[in-house]
Image 1 (cartoon, rainbow, N blue to C red):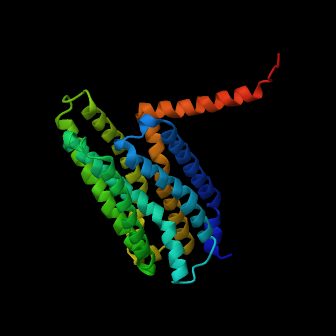
Image 2 (tube, rainbow, N blue to C red):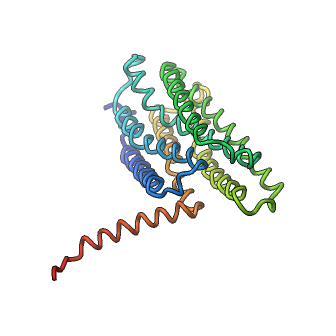
Image 3 (spheres, one colour):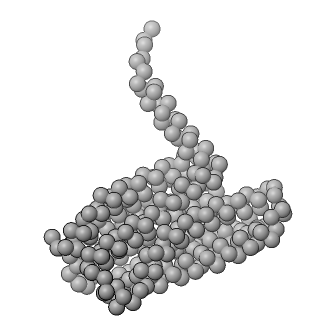
Length: 283
């Protein structure tokens, strides 16, 4: 095992724990959406899609990331490029979907009544179309080899720019008319917009350090020792993947319906266990 691999192996338990937490918390979120019908509505379709993506980040990307970290790179090969494309697909999908959610919330805030006329079919088309674009981006990035880090950093910077612009416009719009339409669907849409802005803001904070580091010129990175580069890269990766934990936590804190659904699921499971543990008395 090389020195770089030894340094990386120190954080393996942290990566494994983080990916398990990502998988479990998003699996619980998906179960809540599946079990509670009133949570499945047009305004949450992109949220449900993001939850599935975050689950795949923990289950698929996490497993492949840990496995690849233990192997030495053999340069560019098409099989290796294909595996790499699959590994980066879901982190890319998470960023793309966050941008879509921000754009959707921007439309809901600026044009609330027109937004209510959007059909379910259009949401499905947007989700399917976004996945096709995501797969294309992943395969293009995976084939870039040496330029991959700069390409992904640039892509992440663009998505963060979209998030920031949407966030600023939504906040300004809400601040300009804080007392208008406090009842009905418009108020509900604005409340959901604020909730998603919180999730987006935390996601930006977890993604930005990774972008800044990998956007640095190679000369600056080469001034660091090999072990320092590995340690910094791994620590930033841990922070980066933490964004897939943020969304369900924000939903649980801000969305009463979601919080109640999770509580009902936990209470039902507890009640079932209690009933199973009690002896059955046959009269």
